[in-house]
Image (cartoon, rainbow, N blue to C red):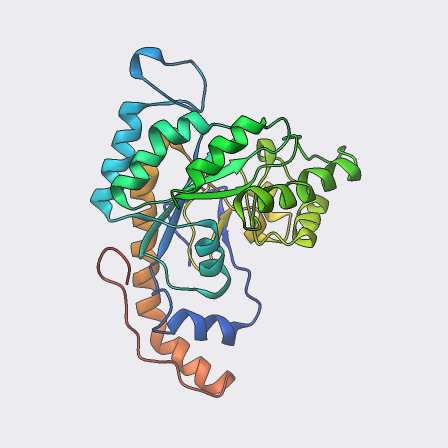
Length: 305
């Protein structure tokens, strides 16, 4: 499926090679229905409107409230990295309109003051791209206390947060990717499955190393569009990697209100496209795969199907 919502330099990529498997997962009534969408949003700093800084990543408390208001009006619910990976890999059931809030870097004050209250109020989760090195003992204790709320989804943002480029040594690449894993396991009791690329930088070799380390998804800093099952919008830099799930785009918090509406447009297009294609897909599946697809049950409402 193409979408006129995407910029001309962005194209959707698929990643499942087995068409029979894709169609079986796509139309399984126990899994997410066509039109299910995920809007990943990247956050950094949140400030009072009277204390703003002039950068490209800080949003005001007023704009954060606007993001939340729009998300609620559109029926979005948060998911974790594990839920996102399951959706992308196997079309596992998630809310019809899903989003994942990812707070980059070491920002426990921002998480505690702004995001945990939202999570408690709306029964949401907040995902973190956490930098490992130089984390003080008292900061780990703070993080562990917040983790006890059950609202945090702590993932890796590198060990020293060193950018991984073509000139980065293999030793540094492996340290950034492998070394956070046992530390996060020790402090939070679970292995990270998402790697948030430091500075948004990645290379084919680094992506291969991340796969070797067991990461299932990776996030860039590119804003390309929302995510569908077997449909990831990519730009030229990511297309050259050959592993769409390890170079997932994220909307920037500074434009998230508009981006949530764009996600709905793409989702509606996907649902309509699937409905139009069902008969031809069922016929092809019958001939090529030797079976029958179940009757379509298309998502038409908000929330978790």
